[in-house]
Image (cartoon, rainbow, N blue to C red):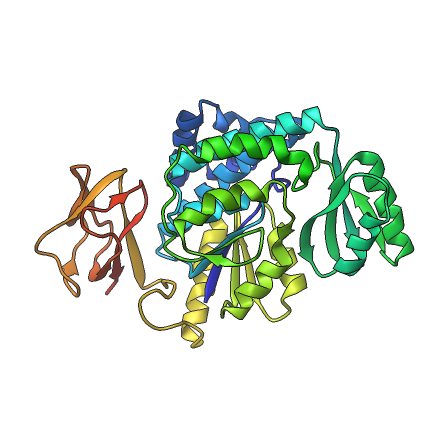
Length: 392
């Protein structure tokens, strides 16, 4: 089984969008800019490290570039069995699973970044990575400090992030070293994320979440707050709000994914942070990072190798290999399938397979129609999978 994972804040870097400017998937950047009223292209191409480090900028750019990468991968027909995202990346995972529309996710991420920026400006906070110490002892180190400091991220074995007031974080780092930690390293962030310091941001985010439609994910998405796979749409607004003040259970999420049968982990978006965590946590897992157009080709080659070696699964719902393709919606609206199409029907390049909001859905591929992935009269979003073809 294949999992797509998505990075969070901290993976951004200057000019990280430059390799995608001439790619078809870059069109998402213009759509995102229109959705939130900001010039995301400028941030992805021209912003320096200091500007990108601002929470309102780092979150928006990381999310949008992750979606550009996802769109490029989806155009090849490769799809996951499971998705998960680290902190901000949870919005990418929900978008990848169809639970959030791209436009709604852009607006939510923009609001989340602004809310967290304001909360951080109002309450001085910081974060630090504690290396080489068991989780329980990191919790003990925080408890031994007379101040506000908590565990914020359980990232990998021997890698836990703490957050809180600067003085308390520094004291907890010293306590952790006394308990055997190899190092306590301050992180270049402007707030104590995933702690009670983010309560004002959580309240603001709840209002934004109440204004968007959350659908049931097409594949399970693991929640940060408890590392559990979720497929119920009604649970996600509360999970996303709670996430702001709760520690990210990432190591536990990796274990859960492996326990569900996942053997291949593909990180989509800028950086390789999650790939490193997966390698450190799951010794036998296949890992791959996709951050550039060239990486998409590498992914296709890796998927082909998995299929030829017999590691591929069988049946509908398994991830798609290079002989299979997804036809996606050109826009948002109600889907109406073409009446005379059925399973095993031959589809040629340019054939109409249905309509969304009266706009034709034409297949860019030739192949055998294996299954409609959208139901008649279902409301779909732009680029949501409509049909699954097996190429000849």
